[in-house]
Length: 618
Image 1 (spheres, rainbow, N blue to C red):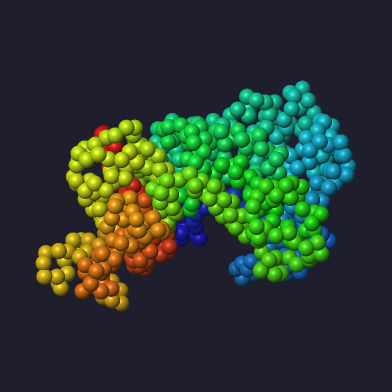
Image 2 (cartoon, rainbow, N blue to C red; image 1 turned 90 degrees about the vertical axis):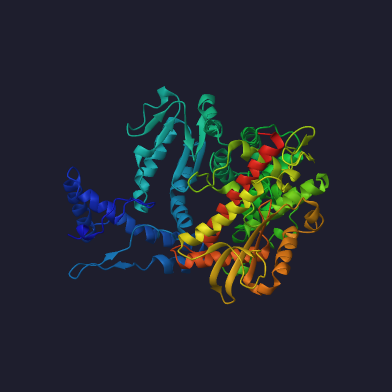
């Protein structure tokens, strides 16, 4: 009866089973009765309080080990885990005690779990000194040695583990070695004679390992550089490599990092459609998006900084003699100045007590990337320097991080996308000299004229597409708005705004007028070179002066061809996003990011078409 009272529906949702899906499954003729019986038995165990005794003892052992090894944390851990929370049921039933392991979502959970697990790993090290490898990452253990030694490890895990609340699942264990050496292991353990995967990294024969790079090349089958670049940034092992460099000495894994970077460069060259030969372009590609790059890091360049930042974040908890080996060498290779400071030998101050001493890992990354940027500055022409710096603004690179979708109009034609990548990297788009097919004037081979030429209707289509994007978002939120509306104070037929919203803010009606400026045009280049978004400020001031009679009701929306919005215009977009969010279930921040992503994709899609048509003649 309780389940049947749930609302109808069958969506599992991102977090798995929901009440609607459960209701549908219970009412299913094939599995409904069996599922109902299983749920009743499961609930009966909880109501009876039949928890394994060792799980309750786990917390007692946890508190004891914390007091022994980390007394500075003992009061906090005791406060969090000694008292049992109570889950109250219906009247007549005893409340349930929360006595199972560590609290889900607790930031200390991995640390406390490792503290208990250390009892097992230390026992293995003491009793089996001939073991070649005894490495653990939380509950993923990796043991290497003779078959007899591995069997002894299994005995320790199965005999000592339950007393600590740790239970070994043989069905999830894998043994790797020669086939004739694997017969002595329990039949439940999976056997693999070629190799196996350790934390996502293949270990074994060359044939088995060679499969690691296939993910970097399988995305080529998509024939979609926009999707390939997104997958390369977010998947294909990049998160694993980041973890690797943060936990391993860089000098120990330099050869492997170099091989990975070669595969990344090869994948990037396929996406770009041309070989990257000069070091300056390669550096720009590997810079993060916030520095005007493509956001595909070069692991070798960032390995030392990643390792130093990881160790530095916890070094105040240990003495100088206990710091990780390789830390001093990696730190010496970097010029980080005061970002990383060595604690005094007698320092006992922990960042857990004094937040002022807390280390910010992002600071090392910022300094390291600034050094890479400053190293290439002398080799950049003024136009290329302006191009890269103007792409560091908020929203300028959203077209690179948004998933392509024809429905949401965020997909970009493959040929246009490759031209956009060349343009945003400051590379020539064609060889020799070509005349513009629209105005017949000679044009540069970097695409600057192609984006500023006002002949033909393409720039108008670009402008109208951005206006429609904002208007559609407003109408979808049921906010009344009109497009191409003139002001009642104007004595001519000029319209001051592309979008008009009645009673928008405390100033009353609002006239939003959108403009796209090419900062490489003669009218903007000189001022744009003086600072980020200075070019867009010229057009913003022009619009304000032209419709001075409207005062604060006139709200120019000015975006540069590289994607950056004027700072005042960005504030106006934030106000629009807040109005939309107030009538929807989304936050203002999420609404603004969604709006900027749509605008960025539409802007670049039309500019890519302009570059292809005017530079390639297609």
